[in-house]
Length: 199
Image 1 (cartoon, rainbow, N blue to C red):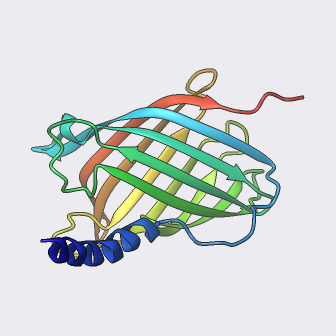
Image 2: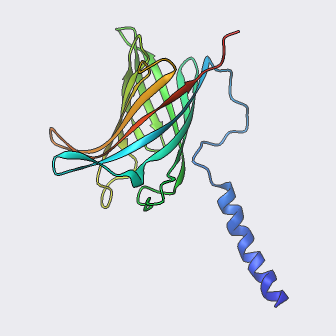
Image 3: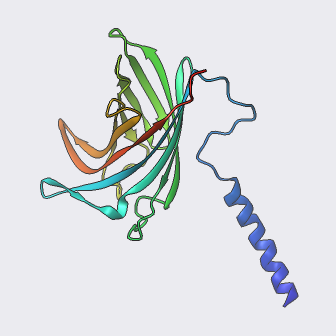
């Protein structure tokens, strides 16, 4: 019996080691450089599926979210945690707890805003940030495509002028067919923005 326990322990240890080393974030051995700004977003998302020509709530896919955005001179880096806490969540959108990573490279636009190029966990694409309010739109080619994934494009729209210290964000999942968009799901996020107090 002792030999069996020892054998099971030897088998289990490599499995635990592999799972503890997995991360969706890029690896680095040095501290991050100084940021121009850091912002924390805390909120909740309501999920909807497009069916029979209208958006239908699907509460089982609602989630809590927590994100930190660090801005540098030439890019942003964002880490977003998603927690599906509804008991009816069926796991089709991945694990209950997920960590997403985005790096958004920026370049000045003629109207005073920013042109954006994004790469991350969900895919890669481009977008724009407004000159004044700081809201943005990103459109990504989904990293996961083909059957059984029922979408190939992700659009993220964020508004920060929704109220003092608050944000609103809509994440749309859809497919492109020639000049048409075929909607699949959307997530309406809203919550609070936390920023450091200026000295």
